[in-house]
Amino acid sequence: MNDSVYQLIVESTVKRVPTCHESPNDFFIALDDCDYPYLILPTPKEMFDNDDVFTIRLIPDVLNKFRYELDNSYTKLSFSRFSTFFDDKTYYFGPEENMLVKFLTSPIYKNYVAWISHLYFKRIDDLIEQYNNEPGKEQKKTIKAKLSRLLIEA
Image (cartoon, rainbow, N blue to C red; front, side, top):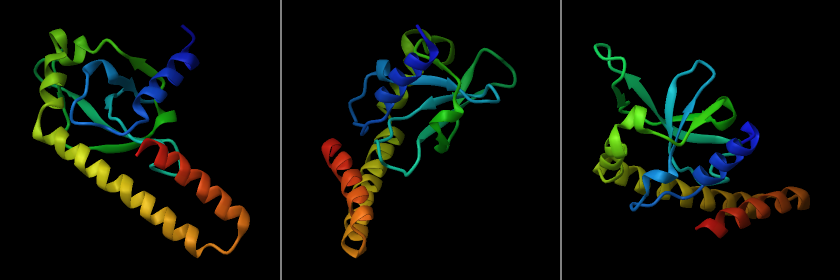
């Protein structure tokens, strides 16, 4: 499959509102320009004014180079920074993606979902306020288009 087509598939899969009932099949590992692996987290479209997504870096164990752990913080990175994508996560998460399944059912991920939901609706409120305060028709049209795209996913 063409790399750009695969990248588009990955982007369309991860650019969505996260839920508490996720399937590990909807997640991807991506390597950045320094070949560091990241788990790409669902991030709604139009959440940011650019192509940023939230990620968690996978950190290799210093004693066992074949073992990885999830970092303890979310990182916002540009989606275009990633060059390689993997849907087979066994190398990083073990057989049957058990570490990913454990993460997706953890309170940490549930808190991420709640946090994103809060940010998402705050973004909508901010755009509504921006729309109401904007005097120019062209700028209002741009804001209205963003709001429409955000509200379709809400």
